[in-house]
Amino acid sequence: MTIVTHEAGAPSGAAPSSGRPAAEPAIVTRGLTKRFRGGQVAVDALDLSVPRGSVFGFLGPNGSGKTTTIRMLLGLVAPTSGEHALLGLPLAEALPRVGALVEGPAFYPYLSGEANLRRFDAADPTAPAATVRRRVGEALDRVGLTAAAGKRYRNYSLGMRQRLAIAAALLGPRELLILDEPTNGLDPQGTREVRTLVKEIAAEGTTVFVSSHLLAEVEQMCTHAAIMRAGRLVTQGTIASLSGGQAVRVRIETPDAAAAVAVLTALGLPDVRTVGPAGPAGPVAPDVRTAGPAEETGTEVTRPGGRGTEVTAELGGHAPERINAALVGEGVPVRGFTVVRPSLEDVFVGLTGEGFDVDG
Image (cartoon, rainbow, N blue to C red; front, side):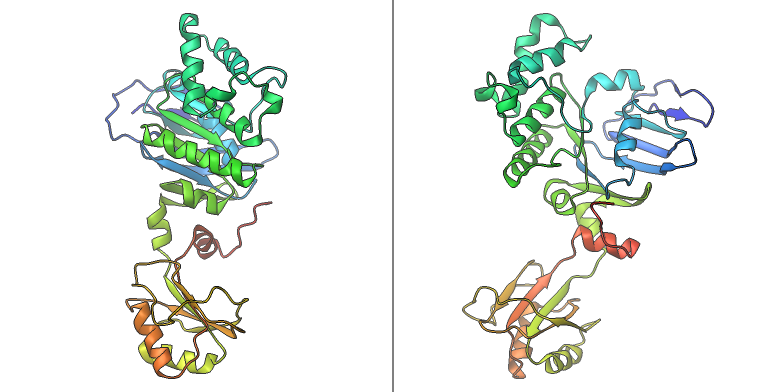
């Protein structure tokens, strides 16, 4: 692996290449740090490993160091210290294999999508002029914009504009695609379009590294994630492993919280809590005793009318349907029953003790 090494006060350099094993990560950083004048530390000793073939979510509140990290990876900002590698190659060799969208797209509004891509392609000294038509056509087709190729950019929807930006990043063969907040400012339809596109690109074999401050978006789109806070890495891993570190809980809504607590405690469920008033009534289920098996998520059974108080407990190894049957058997009126698996937000709060402030 070729690592680009940086030392404070010294110019950056690259070590000789030692080959690229197939399983080598697409991105590696070791102690990567950026300190600006005045002492502000934007990124602090970042150790990151992005597996090849993954959709890797780089997650954190605004101002947590995500964009600065991306700029260092792409050679747009010089790190203060530390080292990094893209695709196991010297940066100059890696960059032609990397597509990137950093801090939003910039296109000529009066030109068509196709004409804009031609100008992007012309700016690439490694792109053969003889095959520009094919490259632009393939990029437009890959993002689903062939039918809108002749349409002026100013008439594109937000989702179409973001897809065109991704097309610009895909004008050549790319092993790695780096996207900085690709769904930022998009409406739900545009967000779905970009999310679907990212999954399709990854399915074709390209590693996708996507930064975001939207927890739910990363959960839906990514296979792996790293969480940043105030310039430091909090945790990283697969989405399943990150969420798996938090306990699955059962949530019961009932007007008789004391009786529910007694039943859950008698069953041996850990961490039984009375949370507070339950929310508004949800859909009516035909049978409150039909809660699904423990591995199912979001299982919810509700009854009409006021929902009373919310009681929660760790599920542990207990089957939800047996918990529900025990409650009903003891005469506890169950008006809501939900199995709740932890989200990335739960992971963030559990690791930092803070809420995820997307405006931070």
